[in-house]
Figure (cartoon, rainbow, N blue to C red):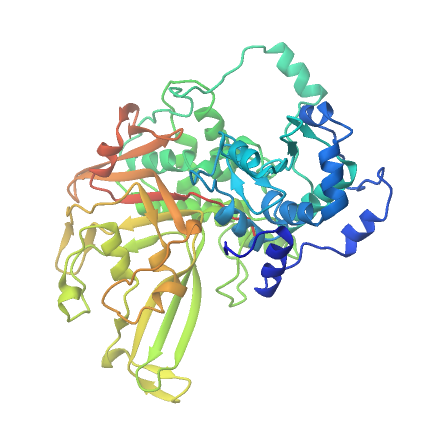
Length: 561
């Protein structure tokens, strides 16, 4: 933040000059201010917290502040740093709401109302108010006003209306139809809770969510993918909250999503006995016939097939006729030729990203760009088959090397000329793939199985991969601006592009006789090895030193558009 900006009014004018948007000094908020202190929003019911009940009438220090500086500082703080009424405001909060002394994001960051100063409640905000004689601060998490002189949180009806209005705008900016409210049991659920007083509460060493899976005869490829899916955080939350609406009249013998939902309930029931996936196997054979049979299958192929069936069975029936919906569910969705079409089902929300392909004409430098959805990224491990430079012949040794090569421009050559719209003739060109939109879960497929007309072999080269991954260097807006096509330039990192590893699928053995196992992350930092029906503890070192075939990364920060 600029050193010459000392007040919230100056801060607001500075944001406006940079195009940072308005906090809404007119419109709804202005109309709210014209009402009496009993005015309330019809859409939001507010009940005072315990802290606010302590000082319902405010204090003299707050009244003096309002009489001299008005309510504009409250509007700015609530709009940009508490409830965040826009995406830009959420980015500002993530950037600036850190303690100016210890640079910590928590606990309980407070903003001074008298000047632009953020500090934590571990003593640094107290030091500031004492030295500067600034009595009033705002908790940027809850929006409560703390008077240091009175030693209490204080309440003011006018300021509360400003906060409620900002909260409503924040909800609309996130696309939420209703305000989030914490779960509370209804009468039926209360009766069930009273009838079953015993509670299951996960502890740091809890194994709830871990279940072994019986091998039904070369079904380890399926077991390891199910282990990865059941430990995908957002997918787990979706199924454990009963969000699925069956498109087959709740006929679980036809709906793969219903069976997966049942498996999630089984995994997190607390039962430790191994599960038998015979129903799931039958459904996969029914809906993905190329995987039918007891032969060993490829885990990556099963992963993509499972996502495809889940995606089709999750689709909401919005088509015009029942026949059209039936065809879309059974693998023949109507095609409109739009490769950028997105689906709102839980599978696409979690796993779908956007891959940008830029084809550049070597004659006129004209660029043809297409963006296609992807569920995973397949990465070559051997020498680059089409390159001629020394870098192209280098074998990658890390996930970063694989991604760098994946996003490196490729010269298509004279045998693959394309018709340039600018030149109106066939010209040589280069092609570059970059990440236009990152999914919540990034799945990487290390192509260890090489199949050709002459040779079938497994590539056992060790490829190192990190526990935490930054995808910023491989984004379209960063990679395409890199003039040095043989390497990645240094770019400022983007916190929205950071990922954490949560599952790894490994293949042990040869191409003809192998076995799949998986590592999954339980809770925050506990790892377990899943080998069919056997579940054993593992360390992060065990995970990072494994061979790696499929790597699953989850976004660290979720931004709701």
